[in-house]
Length: 159
Image (cartoon, rainbow, N blue to C red):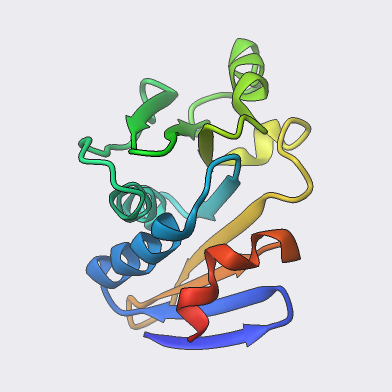
């Protein structure tokens, strides 16, 4: 992986899903609870792969899968729960926005959101945003934008 930091944006090139998971595992190990992460990419771009690594890094042994059809899943980690939302199939958030609102900011919950544009009004301004793009070689470029208060979550990646 190649790292490049520009202010509050960190860019990482990943050549495989295993590398993407390993990167996310480092982020997951640093999380404390209360964080919100919004993941964006094309369909099949690596969002759930990222959450799988994140959960493993946080100490979860739960099976992580895409919540596309269930909208949300919860994974247990030793110090907090991970609430994983996928809004791909929704045209408007409806009652799910209320569920999301109830867990955002809870210090015992990490929230990971796929396809979060539909709930932007519920997502806090200080969320970590992870954009995953694929280049012509099939490599992924992960751009992580984060506020200073979440710098601890990516420090291991810049060392």
